[in-house]
Amino acid sequence: MAGGYYAVNSSSDDAADLTNHGQVYDEDDDFYVLGSSTSAGRADPAGYRFVNIPIPQCANIIQAWLEPAITATGGKIDTTDCDITIFGVYEDDADTWDSSTNRPMDATHTTAFTVYNMTEKASTIYRLQETLDVTDICQEIVDKGGWSSGNAMAFIVFGEVTNQNYNSVRFYNYDYSPVPGYEGAQACWLNIQWTSYEDNSAIQIDDDWHDLEAIKINIGDSWATVNSLKINIGDDWKDITI
Image: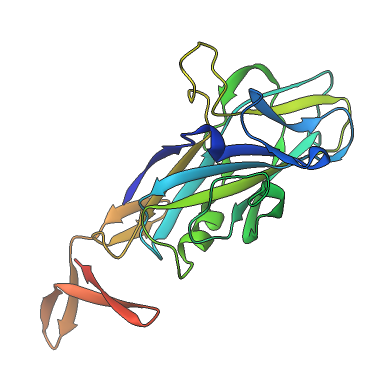
């Protein structure tokens, strides 16, 4: 099994789509407001792009989370204040956000999505870890015919306010820095784990994955070790080394 943390690593790889202003807002502010007390309903979307993701095509995504740095504040709060909805960008290799050619609101969405109800209330910045599950979204992207290791993967995040007493949910961007010169410290993370046909095989037992060191088959009264397997992907057969 492989995996790691991948961060938004440039100003143009996160963006808020200001629908009312007809532009992408990617670096002029410290955060994107995904829920606001000014009006109920869905807020303008934010986009997050992660480059050089080393996942092979058709790998098995074990678990994936989008992990933003956020604050969530409000005068009143209950369990229905703000829903966070996340889609993936359904592209082989997601492009950098751009006001005229690649806005988050215009991106083609994955079929898979996740919804998280914000119940947190925190006036100081903290990272929302292992909460926003994007496993199915990532699986849909790496299963695309044009996906390959090293491509970029992107996500679109919406906030929908159902209680106007709620002040705001703020997702901090790459450019926010509490200390000058430390831009990127609060950039959004993608935490992802996977296995692939290129790895030694793994088997899941309950909630844990274990490396599969050998496969044996019974032939007559004897057990023989299988040294390799093949898997068909599209029109190609790929070797699986055991």
